Length: 194
Ligand SMILES: [Zn+2]
Ligand SMILES: [Zn+2]
Image 1: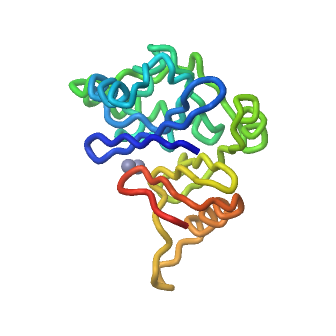
Image 2: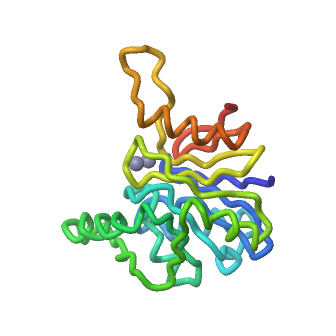
């Protein structure tokens, strides 16, 4: 799979191709649309070719431009476990209006469950699934591409010390491993091998 990695202010965005345009994973900070458009331009991608977007979790450095991209025609794909969360980000920025955050609306969103996400991705030519991988936050999800890679947002690595074990994080990694992925694309920092 041809994964395009873009980084701005330590936030990674990724693009993967589908039969129906590009899928973007995470969108970085609010008020950085011009920088995002510039990064896309440097990769010869027009924003109207980005047909889908997935947000690994609704924290500011990951979902900041979600509505800006929706306004430009990108479809927001949500995992059902995230439905209660994008409005929390809206509320956070109500207290911080100078950030020029655009409220994420409920219109033009596609909501997928673990069960129906694979048929959705199959319809656009990708053997992928959207799975709930809590640990960093309850709304954290991963896009897993079987036998290839996973986009995990801010899921923490497994702690080395036994006393720091965290069963929620371990379960999320176990779930990701079921798909035999080889490369992990995190929300911050460089990709690594699993
Ligand atoms: Zn986060
Ligand atoms: Zn983050």
